[in-house]
Image (cartoon, rainbow over all chains, first blue to last red; front, side):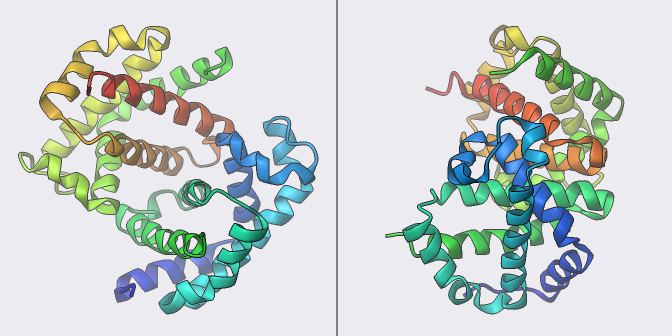
Length: 147
Length: 141
């Protein structure tokens, strides 16, 4: 059972309230595909991912980035039961999409960097710690249904 | 594998960090200690509270070493040999911790550089930090 302090809850809600899903989502996914190129293996149907410029102007990548962020939104709205909220998503990533779960942390790290770049100095060490705890729970929930 | 463009980018970025080495270094360390508390176990001999003199001094050393490595990327093994021995035989830090500090360095750079910390810059620095850590861990066994 994950225990959230009031301060952690407030931090996470605050970040999401300031987040522009249509901006951060695409940026995070683009960054993962550029910084960790092996993650491109899951997006063969997205067309041109040949270089950073292509990835950053690819509409399918942008659209999918937004989907991912809306998925995270669900976790934020169900912070006390992320495990069960994500059960189906976990099965999907394992059985249908066959994604190596080690890659979840990479996308999580890229999203953290995007948020850090947007929030600047207000993304303090304490805020970062709370945010990364949230993402760690999300990643753990996504990993659960891999057998 | 770093391209020439990436090597130049890396030098440019770290050169900009030298004048603010204490700020950047201490912030990265503080982020690491806050997000990954187990990393504090290596610093029981220092005062690592926010804005402490020890934290700023230690942070500065790290950034200066990174900046020097950046200027000598093709000879990292030679340039870092003393630091490498130090980390292997004296500090004996569990190797997984390098990634934790590297990540916090990236977050610090992102906060500091904002939009200028582009995906391409991020990739170059991440690769550089991985190479740097690999040299520091080289003599571990």
